[in-house]
Image (cartoon, rainbow, N blue to C red):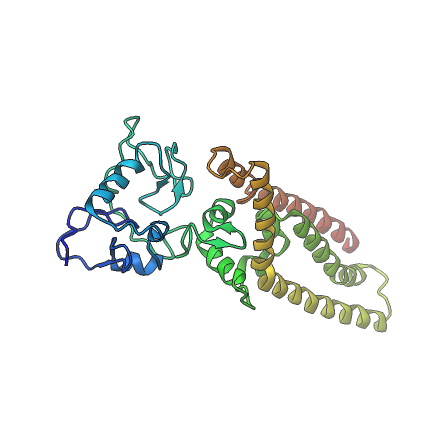
Length: 310
């Protein structure tokens, strides 16, 4: 076997050392750490295979020089994200791509984390893989937090999976979580449905607190209506948990494609990833505002109900 000591693995960007478990691409001969190749699932130089260009020490050195001379895309050595040639920081994890203004590649990462489904923003999916017509990298930029959870589910959905996974935040918070993920239309609709389903409980409580109680048969009907509303509310939560990922994926695809069109199809501009981050990701400010508003509304409603018992 050839000695690859001192060369860098194309995936993790770490230099090979003596005794490491190394595999080579059967087509071009490019070396990889076995775990890195297993995670990626393919050779990173596939575009060269059709040209019959084999991997060798000279081409590896040329690729290394080209990576940092401003003429080629920069792949983050920490998370694997492909960044624009003039990028200074990784658009996903924020790792510095150059040391200062010298244009030199960054040094070794202190205490590096081995790439896996829980330490990369792609959940084990290749950042260049197309999911529904857009790359996993674009989806990760759009999703932001917890993209390592969403990207594998998006891949399964794009491949025709019947189930899209169970989303616990959507189950627990329903409309609030939709608003948090900037799905405002569905979020508002779910909040209205939640309010409508709470009306039977409110009417039942109001009739009990009034000084003139209604007939027993009316209370029984209100109680039955309240039980039905509770069951419907549970069904609504289950529906949110089952279908949020699928709906979120479709919404993300539509928005990303619109942003692509607005950028003229040029996904390497600095403005494009900024637009993805701005239109996507999460709305952290809206949730505390809504929570405060609901707390105030609940306090006013409690005072109103207490007025019946005085």
